[in-house]
Image 1 (cartoon, rainbow, N blue to C red):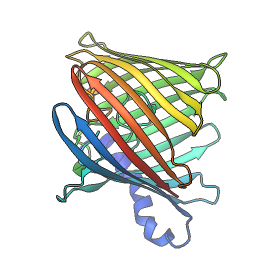
Image 2: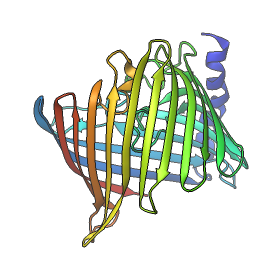
Image 3: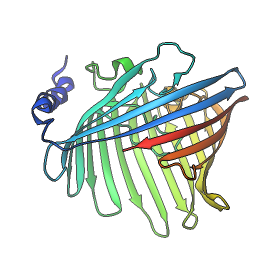
Length: 310
C-alpha cells in the first residue's frame, strides 16, 4: 500500500485507540432518525421498507473543536439505505468514521468522510455515501469558502466502506460564495469514478420561503452532461407549513456512475420529481413525506413517516 494512501489512517488511529480511555469523561452526542415508507414502482412490485440512521459524536476537547464522528445505517449500497420489511435478514453497517478539527476559519476532516451535497441536489453524491480521505475547508470570509477533498471512492458496497483504500482516485476543489440579493453559487472541478467533471450551481431566493436552483455538471473527458433545475420552499396552509421540492433533471446516457449515485432510483435520461413533506401535528419529532418521481418512463410513488431523536 502506498504511503500517501495509508498516512491518513495512521493519523486517525490515535483517536481510535484513545476512545476507550475517554469514553467515560468525554461528552458524547448522538442523533437517530428512523423511517418507514411504502415504495410503489411501475416496473416492480410495491415494497414496504425501513431505514435507521445513527450519528454518534465524541468530543475530545472542552471547546468541542476536536471530535470523532460516525454514521451507522441500514442499506447495503452507497446510494441505498433502506431495508425490506418482508422479514428477511438485512444488513446494517458503519459506513463513516472520521476525525474533525474545527477552528476559526474552517475545518479539517480525516477518515471515511461525508459527501456534503445539497439536500435537493440530483447532481451530487448520495447524502449517505462516503469518501475515504481528507477534507480541508478554508473560510475566505463570512460568505465564501474553498473546500478541497483528496481520497478514494471506488468500492460502493457499504460492507467495505471502512476498508483500506488501494489508491488515490478522488479529487474535488470547490468554491462557494453568497452573492447579492439572496443569490449564491458553487463551482467545482472533480475527479471521481474514472471521470473528470466541472460542476456549477446557482441558487436564487424567491422571497423568504422559496428558492430556485439550477445545476450543471459537465464530464469533460467524454462530452457528457447532467443538468438539474428546480424549486423548493414552504407553503402556508390551514394545517400548517407544507414543504415542497420539485425539479427536472437530465443525465446523458454515457455520463457514468457519477450521474446516478444520488439515490437508487435515479438513472440516465429525462426525470421529474415532486415531493411534499411536513410535521405531524401533536406528534413531536415526527414528520411525513409524499413523493413522485419519473425517469424515462419509469414511475415511482413513495409515502412514509420519519422520526428524529436526539
